[in-house]
Length: 139
Image (tube, rainbow, N blue to C red; front, side, top):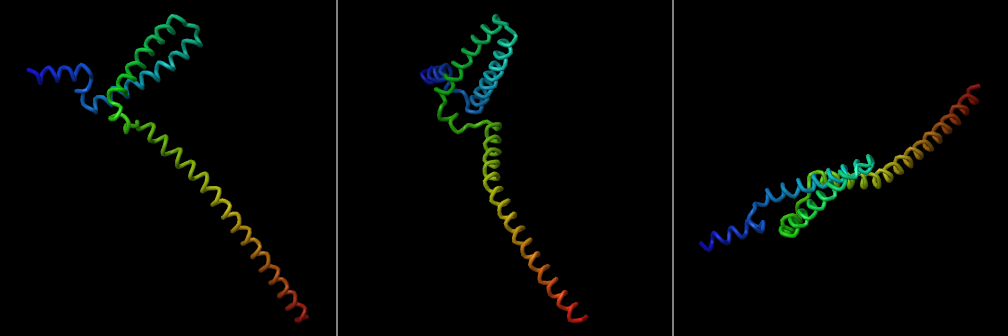
């Protein structure tokens, strides 16, 4: 009997819910919060203040639910990062590293091409000198 009361107490407090479900609920709350932000902007642009007041009330409820889930399961959600955030993080890191390395590679290629150009110019100059001397000796 005491165990059942404890389990009921955990379910009421939200601690008995499995972690994957918590993460799903948390992500859906975040998605709903983003959707409401967009709708708030739209209702402001359309001067629909009745809808705006309803959206603000909904946003307040959703934000309090998000805070509640975060406070109950902060350790479980700490390592949880959405796929969208992970992809964004990877792409921004790749872009930053490619930008830094790309400039260095471009500088190296430019310097190498400049050296090749100078070498080709000196070889052409030497070959012209040699050929002009050969023609002058032949004549």
